[in-house]
Length: 292
Image (cartoon, rainbow, N blue to C red):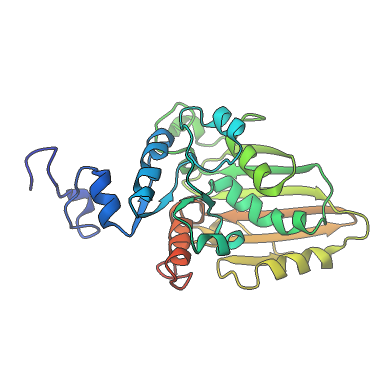
């Protein structure tokens, strides 16, 4: 084992998972030698490193929020320390951006809340089936808050409790609105689970739109999407998607009222799994490789 922090090391915690040496970051070396790089870094570091790697020839899959928002003013508000880049960026919601992903050099993998919300709503919004005024009631397990310890995520604070947070002040709302092209009311909640995103979505259908039109739009949108499962009136649950790359979407209609439920595992479809799914598209592999 190397004795200096500047040299390659082997980490016992990764034994039999990754037995190769772990080397200090060298952007020139990594960008020149790697075909693909996955970044799971703080926003400010990702904003600096991702374009540098892509400019050196690597295809970059960034899991931070640094490149998700296209509007400069919104990016400055929600990610004020990330700066600008002239490099083309593809928003990596796989099912909605396959054609763009095929030639992408820098992929901004979506946030976990937007992944579930946009997959559920975008086909309906694009087909003009719903009125303005969408409400997204979202709940996340503790891992959705990241790994930095806080009072809010301390076991004794969140156990046996549920709390709303980021009301009118969560950066994922801007991401959802960007992809849908319409304002939404988005309220996230922290629930005492290790993992999982559960979103209950309320919308009003336009005059003349019925349940069959909703089902038809979703079926057409995801006919060739192996990781979106449409459950119809059988509303999904977090346990149905935990430890998988699936997004399950169910819905019920009463008159012009629409209620949808969308569930994902925030650590898989909401993060690492979707990044691998994007990698498969970029490099021409079967979309499900490594994910089933």
